[in-house]
Length: 247
Length: 99
Image (tube, rainbow over all chains, first blue to last red; front, side, top):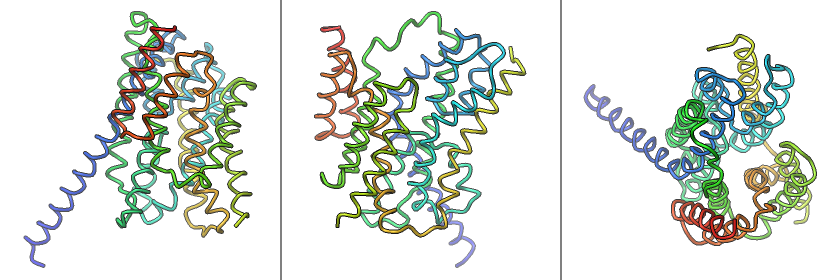
């Protein structure tokens, strides 16, 4: 290959990465409809608890995990109880272990210097969109199935929206009132239901999901706090373990 | 504007959260899984997703339950954007109608 041919090949690869990145941004757009109202609410609640307009983006930008931030804000005192907040954060975000484990076979081939920064952007939304895309590409025969620029596009869109709109929420909090009264809360389940439909492989394969749904719903009704995610996910996994022994 | 204790608490949160993000990958990246463990891993994404939205299925608000049923039906037939639009619109309208 001559120098110009190498440059041309590199240019094509960069174009492809750019197109994949933009495809990721586009895939995340419907998700943002659900993220933005939540971000505004979190920012407003944080401001109410005494966090400043600088401290809110510090939290949402460095931590970037909405569920744990809502929980932490509920428990926020002045000064904050650091150990308690760290423990609750671990509890709420423990689902990330499972999510990372599910992602591991798809990102095994990538170098660590790409994986470790990329995992910082792993949230419910970017993980679900990225994994669903990898599963679809695997079925279609694409190699590698996991598209890193697609995932980064989706993750960055959610990240920037989260950091920016929690800050807006902190600044505008007192003016906004209750965003929850509109229908935006339904955007989140809508996104997840479509993603589940994409993972559907027949009723038999979906039995663990049903167990998870029932276990999580019951836990949610009976136990206060965010335990229901862990309880539901683990029940489904135990069910999958036993059901796998049937055949 | 920035309180040192608040910064410490935020750094603790951020550190813990990042560990949860890399933990699953670090533990599993170099392991070959048994067929059973593979079945569990294949079910895992759906189990986590459905668990996160489980509270919506037991909402005490009849408007939200009806909107969820409509959204579920839409999700089986339509792509992402129309499903989200139908979900948000039906929740908004039904909450306004039945409260």
